[in-house]
Amino acid sequence: MDINTVKKEWQSIAAAIEDVDYAVSGYDYSVTLEGDKVRDFATMMLAQEFYLVDLMAVHVSPLIEIVYQYAHVETRCRVMARAFVAENGEIATISDIYQGANWHERETRDFHGVVFTDHPYLQPIILAEEDVDLKPLLKAEAALKDVDAIRRKPPEPKPEPKPKPEVKAEAKAKPAADKSQEQS
Amino acid sequence: MAIDVEVLDDPKHHRYVLNMGPQHPSTHGVLRVLLELEGEYAMELLPVLGYGHRCHEKIAEHKPYKAFMPNTARMDYLGALIYNHGYALLLERALGIEVPERAEYIRVITSELNRIQSHLLWYGAYLLDLGAFTPIMYSFDDREHILDILEDVTGSRLTYCYFRVGGVSRDIDDKFVTSTRAFIDRLRSRFPMYEGLINGNIILQNRLNDVGELDRKTCARYGVTGPLLRGTGVAYDLRRAEPYSIYDRFDFEVPTETKGDCMASFLVRFREMEQSLRIIEQALDGLPEGPVMAPKVPKKIKIPAGDYNCSVEAPRGELSYYLVSDGSDAPYRLKVRTPSYSNLSVVPEMCQGMLLSDVVSAMGALDLVIPEIDR
Image 1 (spheres, rainbow over the protein chains, first blue to last red):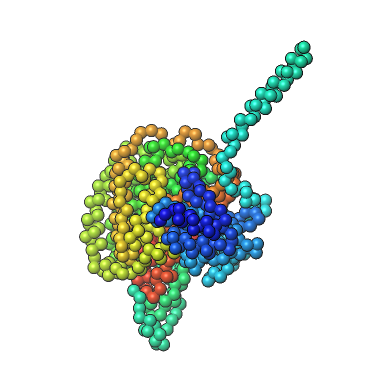
Image 2: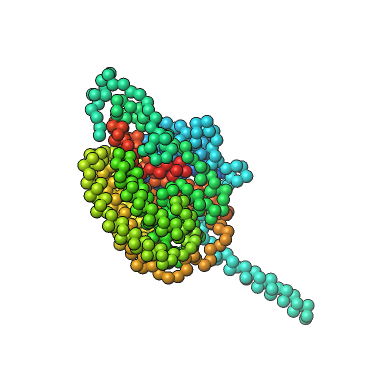
């Protein structure tokens, strides 16, 4: 697998591709997708011989985010593909492309109430049938965070403190100047 | 073994539904499989899960990071230390904590002992499923030695909570080292006996050969990992593919087979025990002196906003923790990807049209641990 050709293919459908530092985050690429492109992306990944590690939902404001984790058995290439569900809480299934997604999608339906359209058997899997409307992993309104709050912040804070001493120095200098003026 | 479709079209054959489990001895826990049988052939299979669901992911969101460590051990009770390891690594990566050398070595030694223990239990229990009563007596005898060794150092026998963020909770002593070395010699001396008594047995050969065949592409479609994937000829082991901790320092092989049937994964697991012994031996030889905890681990952990992943090789395949943090002192979302969940999802396709007795062979080869599926 050649990562550059693979990335070029991704670029044709992905909204954004970000290189991630494996040493900190434990994965290599973050791919942002439009909600209607998840099936195209899954087809592409299967053709490139990736396997589906996991599929999960994160409840953020304004919409629930679905994260698809792919990895490759020959080269280290761990990819997080993310897409938001539509406003009615629906997203297309990929269980006919990656059959392993079938159970993960049912689990996501249990925990977050996401409806995967055209799923062959979207019945409760982990929760009991009478708990179909429980959706236990949805956040209470007070705990719900905006999507920007869970995104990695660029490592900028270090340069920021530098101007502060200058301000302090000016502030210190000013009273000194005042004093000198008073004295004079 | 697939059967002739024309036979099935015969109206004399009728279909009926049978529950296998939740208390069936070969499902090893509360797993129910709805079988649609035609004579003795399983035509449709529908695993029914969730009997042991304990909301671990929900609990995680309401606990400080460190307080979730005991929960990790209760998902896969046979690979508890490896689950500890994955979670500790996840937090150490996110915080940039360096673990002392000695702690890394202790982690590897105890994790590999844990892996052998898990494989030994599978070995005995699988053969018991297939009707051989004696092997479980031998394998439990060996396994008991590991439990004693680990009990001395961790304080528990099954659901260990031994690893901490930044190291391990207590140091090992000379007794641990001598008894582990004695155990290595003991298990090595037992392998020829196992091979002679069991692996070459003609009944076992007939029960496992050509049953439950998987290929590389099916594994990719379902996310099947671990010994099952290695049985199809793919040498994919996360200890090699994405070396975490200090696994890149050891010389060990990744055993593979080519056929992808039950016999292949059986042999892969059996050979993995020897490779784990090799890793332990090298780690004991290179064990450095020093502290076992990193000096500056904050009491209250706060992880910068963002998402973090940590994948490790559990006895049954790929274990992956995915953490979404909002910068507070508890996870915003923690997803645990357990290997048995994905491995079991292949059963409806793998076992379609099989003899019921072969279904037992094929499901046993998955080495299911139900609490890690239900979480």
